[in-house]
Image 1: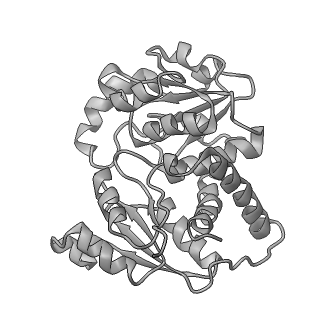
Image 2: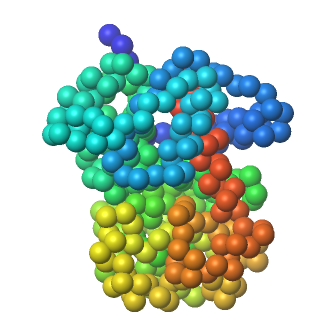
Length: 304
């Protein structure tokens, strides 16, 4: 009997040791591509199915380019051009699609959809974003920090803004990468309570941004209204005003702090244009690192 496939639906699906090895491999893959210009077709002939219910720029480009770099090909699927849009059960689609490809990436709304698909898939499934988690972005963020500052273990990280899927993934990252996390958000926009309780030994909530960001080694933010919350935009703008990441607030952090945003960003809202467009920001590098870290992830899940 074949071994069940490895999935990556959250950071908890890999061990801390596997995550560390993945980042090391990502650095090698990045060097091969950007410095030495060597080919690295470790997945020749492999087929990646990409099921996207949510729109995407960085995730789609990074996975399609990544599988191509590794020698494989991608098939892009949406509800509009598949039977998923006509009500075919997730379980049935998972059985059929996974019988024809080697790897599946799914980007959807409810996390349970990704879980159900993985339960019936015969090949590895990667969560490319759900309302609960965005683990692929965390791989890129952790890679970026490691490249510039070394190990993040023992450091202080501050999450500023909505307690959303990125915030949830940072809570998991605090456990897997062994850092302390401070979350600063309005009371009505706190992250999942169960997740907070499970990680209370290394995660704390602080309501005042100046206190929360004090001595932080890494500060991370995201849009105030995520996909599907556009109708809440005006109300959220009012409630999140004091949580904007800007140069003044950043002055409370460590002198060599890094700051990140998963993009797309709204200049002048959750982050100032001055920081986003600063010549020394690593935000754009983190976006590129989606490519390299996801290539390492695909290799790992396929046993390369």
